[in-house]
Length: 492
Length: 101
Image 1 (cartoon, each protein chain N blue to C red):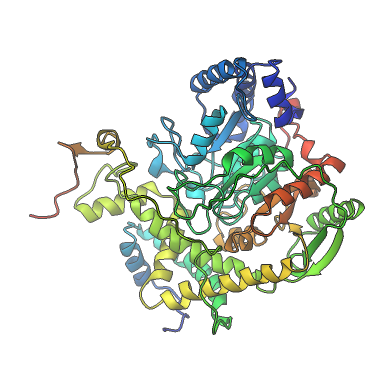
Image 2: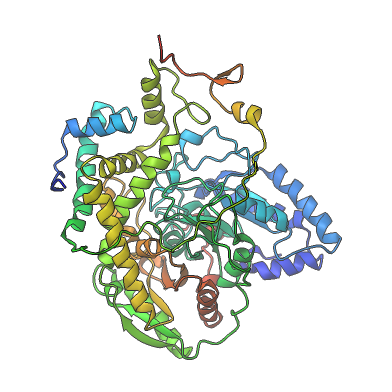
């Protein structure tokens, strides 16, 4: 089986028709991980024995003709999802000894569908980062150029899919953590509407923004995985109960008459020339597919970064208060009294970026500043959300770059947090408004590095977004391009 | 409401924040953090210039109706399993340094 060029749908068909066994498929991916991941560092944990045991169960099920869309398919999971019996670190020393005692809702759903756990992917510590450099387990390398970052925080999932070490990977997105790494690694990634994917067992960063999603080569792959992932869960207070939807249903429909909104603010300043050129060319392709381009405006979009860096750290400082060295996780080896134990445990267990965000959050929530920062940020959040409502009165989907530049150098932005934060300038507002967002490969920029086109839809318009992405992918082959990692050894 | 030009964060402020957040900071970290947090606070200070009179704060993107469930126990007792993950447990209790003499 050609793992580099086979879609999930084709893999699933091969499994159901018994042209390949799940064990063979899983072994093939495990071999690729074994051969290539030492250069990428995309995985934190791989456990071939467990994966193959799951494969045998899937083969049994398939042989009884009880296979579903994902039965026997190995899927990599971001190490933010609790997986019972597997190390679940969230990229942090704090959880470097944490074997999850239960499965996340998402993991339960994949298990019920007969999918296999291929491994746990590397990520920025507690999902805080845009380059995967804050991971306790070291940075992930971009498969297109090992000197570049893969993006973050789901950098391991994006790099693994880009190098075809996994046919699909779960990911999470709080301010761009699915779409930005998908863009930088040349793969597709979707962040659904807030509330569609349960947060139960998904380690919390900023709960009002965190949303699980998928990274895979193409939109059709995303739709298939999403069909399994989405669903109401009473254990997540913000989970949305909606009738099940088949996200593949609209894929084949043409785009004639589609109104694409282009926010003036996404095309003015700060986008590098190579990214602009690739985005323009993909918009021209959409015109050929029958779409109409409409100018829209999102006047408050520049404020999305400051709003995010009040709200997300505030929620993080509260969520991460649970790591105290008492019940699970890291505890300092030496300490005096209880406060000293807490303080040393947290000083040792958290890395610098997590500490910065906890301190920022503590600051904006402290007495005297709550109104000026937190409430003001929530008010501006409404203005940002209202901008989208007005824009969607004039268009069906909004498009623009997913990231202002192609992948940057490892180490380039680590000393300047604000520069790093601005990597997410086009993705953050989507989380603030709770909208679904997608990034798809749209050509290459300088250095032969991938460019991502971002598609933003109205709430619950995932099916439409996936159709818009899939139709483009029927006319182009950017999503089928694979880095030459295994052919030349080093791509750089 | 205090003026939010508190961007000029002092080391004393930073130590107080760290203490509130239960984070021990080494003196070498203080200098770097002071500058970096100052930069972040400069960034978020852009919000002060926005006129938000009459705008309701938005806590969640969707107007969600909180669902109610039956008032029955759904959790199973997994005390032993959970305690087995703790750095220090004795007789079913989590151990921490003495807090009362």
